[in-house]
Each structure stands twice: as structure tokens, then as C-alpha cells.
Image (cartoon, rainbow, N blue to C red; front, side):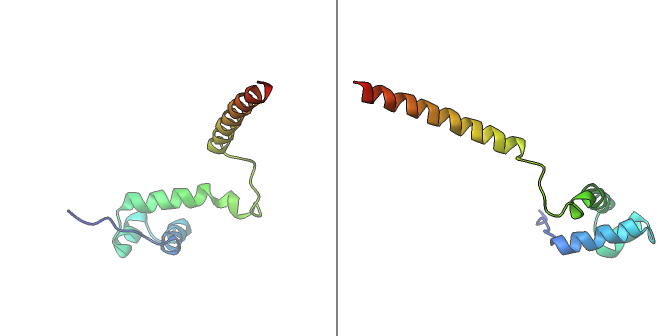
Length: 91
């Protein structure tokens, strides 16, 4: 079984930029770097999708959905603890 290869972000960016230039076909770029053409296309698509983030200045639009769910769960746990402890003080 072949070992899975890991590529650096710089290498992915280099290949994606080469694909974006349009000088060579995706197949030519893939053959040059010993990659599958689908991988080159995926990196190219990711580069295009992430292009707007380059100009955002590092600003985030807000918390992600996962962060919001995690915070709601924490609020729920703290509310239960608070209720439990307040009942103990009343006794």
C-alpha cells in the first residue's frame, strides 16, 4: 500500500498559481509535478475560492457555526450549575 503524500502550503500555492496562469493545461502541470489532474484542479478551485480572503485584511465576519454551538452548550452547562448551586444555598 502506497504511503499518502503530504504537500506544503507553498507547494500547493505554486501549483495552483501555475494552473491559474493558464500557460499550460492542467494535465501538463500534473505530469510536471507528478500529481493527479484532479488534485491540481482542486487546488486551483481552492485558490479561487480563497482569493477574497487575501484582501480582507485578516478580518473575520464573526464566529463560525461550530463556535456558536460550542458556546451555547457551555452557557447551558453553566446555567444548570448555577441553578444547582443556588438551590444548595437556599437550604
